[in-house]
Image (cartoon, rainbow, N blue to C red; front, side, top):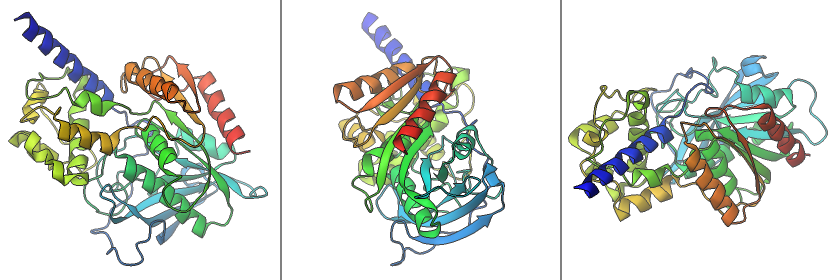
Length: 389
């Protein structure tokens, strides 16, 4: 009997940790503003990754930029097939330096789950603290909406999927360079939360995806990591999450919806209860996650445990942050009081980087999720100055 109680307590703790790990704030993402089209264009021979579909000029001052452009372009989805996506190009004020504006690819945090929710290229998209600082420091910014979050209706956004996030970022860089001659060849990727994971995914795949580039490094602010390992503890036995953590239901549904599309062979539906499947089916029909009534047991969404070898391997392929194989330096900015990606997950990522000899520096703050103190901003600025010199 004691063993059963202990097991239930451990599972409840795992559920709480998952709830914390999946609850990403939307404060840094611009509000959804880009009206989606009815359908994506056909993937013809013009669907080469990085090829431009269309551009839309934005007025001076858009998102705080001296010159801005929305770019529609081809990339690859989580299934590896051609898919259209959108993103923004922001240029600083003044004349480009010799060699062009150094580029920072800004990978945004969680902003929603459906078309028009990316917040990076729409006419009403706003500046945020990261892009504003980059522009003020003299860097051009390319900012992908991510697959499924721009103006194209391309199906479910593959939430937290490494391959689609990295491809969308790298392909936007190539697309932007093809239409804006003032961009330098050297570039860095940086982002918070989901965007921190996307930055690491981009840094890891840039050497093997697309045409060679002069990549200089990555900055990840409180990146999502190791959530797939916590998910393995979830099953029909998990009780309701505390009220403060109820957003976690939506994030779990979004991951499962994305993985269902990325890896149909694993049969995600078989892990879902009828109620859970009905909710997963709704992911991406709007920007918010499907509503789950207060007090709903997390386990009521599931028909069987998520810890099967097949699903664990699938989720690992889908979203596991690489902990080796980086070719350029990385800056990790963590917060010890992060309750969104709990600090034990940050500690695990740091330990893995150290164990695998990854060239990186870590600066620890004591704030909440994606909060930046003076030392972290200084490290951010120094990393960019050094990498893009």
